[in-house]
Length: 66
Image (cartoon, rainbow, N blue to C red):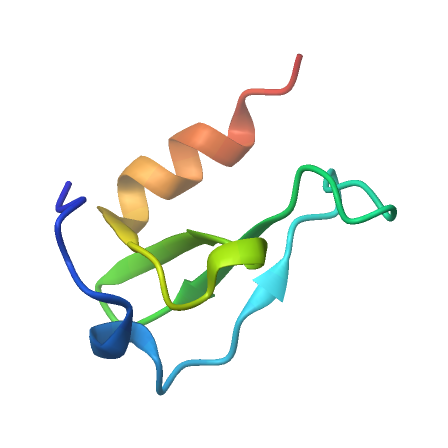
């Protein structure tokens, strides 16, 4: 995982809001899938930091439902 990556490195990707994000502008997580990694950011801070994880790690994360 690389949580120090700048948002400019992932700015050319299509971002998708999580289906679990609130509709009232509260908890909003967006992701952008690249070839080998997935970028994750707070939709309220698009210029802020981007967390980058492997596709395998992302698949394991979204697989776990509470």
